[in-house]
Image 1 (cartoon, each protein chain N blue to C red):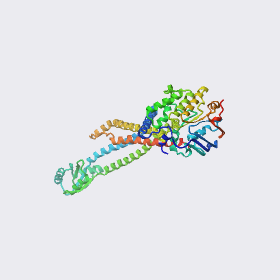
Image 2 (cartoon, each protein chain N blue to C red; image 1 turned 180 degrees about the vertical axis):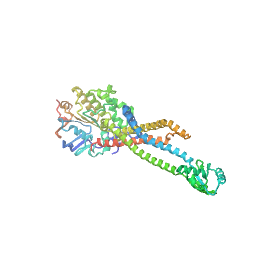
Image 3 (cartoon, chains in turn red, orange; image 1 turned 30 degrees about the vertical axis):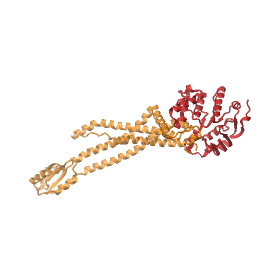
Image 4 (cartoon, one colour; image 1 turned 90 degrees about the vertical axis):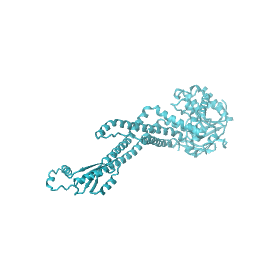
Length: 233
Length: 317
């Protein structure tokens, strides 16, 4: 493991999109290695933008975003893949390939890394088993429900065992029971050492899990509630 | 930071070495073939366009190649006219004719009398009564010498000039020189067309790949999201470009061979009327190899141009 005690660090980060829309302004916080943190706020508060800045899907307009001690904003185009392979991302829109089988979708990060096929097979099936979709491995994403597609996306995010997992509304399409189950799954990943940052507006669920909560409001950090202060419902 | 740092600081494997490289290449190769096979009609149409485009300069090249072989044959049919001194009479002319016919490098010697020469001349110039008005025929005896095949005509005419009783030696190579110049001109034209069509092939493939990229932009986006390098995204398209080029080159070869086959009958009949056993030659393997591999490389080039532009657009600036 490399040096920095912080997995992610934001230093007065601002993001302004072309056209003048200010998505984030002056956001600063730290995410410790091995921490599990929720990011909440009403829609349009800048949750997705914040996640995108970490994975360099967007570049900050001002300030510094550090990942594992490295300034993400100064990473060159050719080093972006290196960064992305350190981060598992669960996208709100799933971002699955509809013409590839579930198995092949989940296998993508391993294929890109050049892992041998028997190893890919083992790890993909383990990941699908964890999200409860092993029996769907030969299906195509459009044949699955929204919730199932979401879980395929999660399997893809964790299959390469990245040190950081980002999830944007991972329970958005799921019923409460499944949502709780999935959150518990993230908790277990975190307990195995993965740093987890989840954007969600499901406040009931967040309260129940009693983890640190970052609250975004109109692009600024309105509150940073430590885990011990999160009141159980 | 080096690539290997990725596997040290996190759980993501980034195995270096030849095997991972080979696995990624195998994946790209298979995925590019898969993409072409999934759309057989579109692939076929592109290959046909490429085949026609490539067969035009190749066909022209083969036409010239064959024309040069014919004209090589013609050079042998060329004759040298040996004008004798005016005072040499029929007997002297005949003696010299039989002497020359023993020279190596000479196939035949055909003596033409002054009377025959005058008749031919007046006939050609339509001056029927000229011979009546001239008291004495001013024309000398002429020997039409046919050089052997492979005999250098210049050397031969030099030796003929030195022979006793020879006044002038005339070699009429002008029309052959003109033919040679025309063929050289056409050859230059073929090269020019070849270059133009090569550029066209690169652009046709580039454009096809561009549409391919457009259809698969979601896939490219997702690949980039999960950490694919530019090379990994680019590679299947480069392979596709290569397959298009290779297929187009092979199909063009087929078109040229088919055309030669179709033309072989009429050409045979035509050369038969000249009592020649000339047949159309197929392109030699060097030409086929240049055509097929060259168009494959052009395909890679076209694909590279198309993908390069797109890759610059997918990452945030």
